[in-house]
Image (cartoon, rainbow, N blue to C red; front, side, top):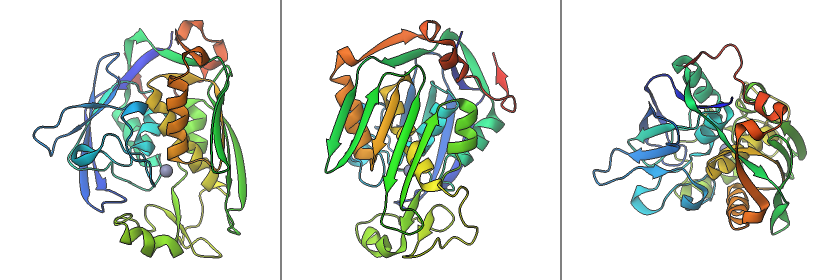
Length: 305
Ligand SMILES: [Zn+2]
């Protein structure tokens, strides 16, 4: 049986928002099965919990935003990607500001936090969204698609006219362990030449070399360099996992992306949901053994029951 998971106890984390530059404190609170992932803006007295769901996504410029207007919550993708990576399905995220803290620009700090907190198996099976047919979206020469596969796999290609990035392609076969090793640590990135333009748009006010890879026209400006030589495409996979986790289920299917971003990932999820013949929701027990195996947590994460 692959059980639904929550966290073993409540945990708090403080950091700054990448785009807002504001300090935020976030509290993760354990929940029972079938609760899902919900956010609550505790700084707004009238605010109600908001389910993390592909259909609640508002803007997708530079980050994925849930909801809209004053109650929106920005930059949810790295936290959601990490929760998916560790198979955590049920948690309430209380947050006292408009943006999830950026931490080091990757999912690594959240992995560390969740590892310290511990994970709890709930007494109910996970459900999986199984892709039955190809669903594809295309926009301006960029595309993304779902197709049938026994486990979650993501093959991403990114193309940048930059000598350090160029074209990078990575084929990731999901398991909790490989997520932690190969994907979670990959940081977001940006270009020094865009900084003024983004700041004029009110973005990346909290951006620094501590929470993003920054490149000038020739090289990486971070003194510590890269964590992987293809860290950029690995980060694209972290973003993709966070964005498709908004379908609300573990996924058995292959996602292929070419020059994709948050907008295309959300369009892909919406198109899938509009195509009921292209997927089914099944209990974990009806999946192939390898797909169930992939959701085992590595030994260094403590799991309670
Ligand atoms: Zn990202």
